[in-house]
Image 1 (cartoon, rainbow, N blue to C red):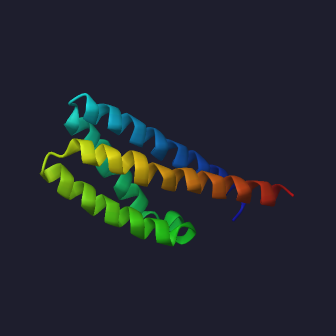
Image 2: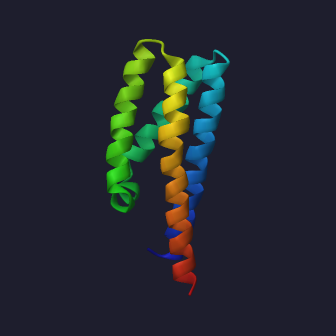
Length: 110
C-alpha cells in the first residue's frame, strides 16, 4: 500500500471513530433519527468501499454482521444495546485499523 492510500485510510478511519462517538451521544440524548442516519451512511461507505474490503476483509464481514444486529436492535428501540455494540465492538475495529495503517505508513517511509 502506498503512503497516500495509507494516510487517506487513516483519515477515513478517524472519521468513522468520530461518527461512532457522535452517534452514541445522539442515542443517549434521544436524537435517535440523527444517530441512525449517521450510522446508515457510515456502514454504507464501509460495506461498499473496495479498498476497505481489500485491506480488512474479515473486519468488513464482522461489521456487516454488526450492522445487521444494530438494525434489529433499532427496530426494537434498544438504543442502549446499540450504543454498547458501537462502543465495545465496532470502535475497537477502527482503532485496530488505525494501528495497522500507522504501521504501514511507517513501513513505507523507510
